[in-house]
Image (tube, rainbow, N blue to C red; front, side, top):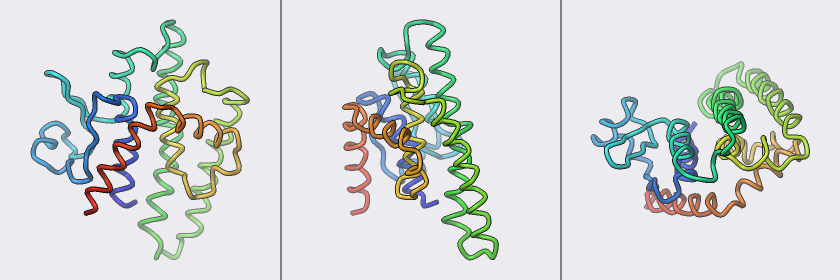
Length: 200
């Protein structure tokens, strides 16, 4: 998929969780010498605070969630379940979406393109159906909002404009609730301003 879309999704995850701790970054910062020294794969986002430097959006979000109130429950068991949803978002729900995106943007001229897209969309819908059943009528995945919801919402946003999510009203409402949170809105506005400025 286009680099801009892929980068903006990853940056939004960490900047929403970190809010003021993480600075919004441009599309090209991942290729600077400084960033390459922090991230061996030259990607974004990275996180720096004091003598700590982290990469991988999931690791950044988990670290910030562990050090700030409001993103992980106090109860040990509830906290463990919230962490489950961090990994579920990145390792179970997101991979078929990313594969679908890659096929959509990079394989349109292949003779098997439509058949492959159909197969990948079915895989996405399986995950959405499972997630929808788990969410049920609840506002969030496990009690109060957590870092697991933060990442799940940003993963589901990758389907924006595709129409795929429209068949799951509870998930659409779930994403809307996540987007309506003040921290999300502040982080999104800050990151959007950076990307807009980078386009000249």
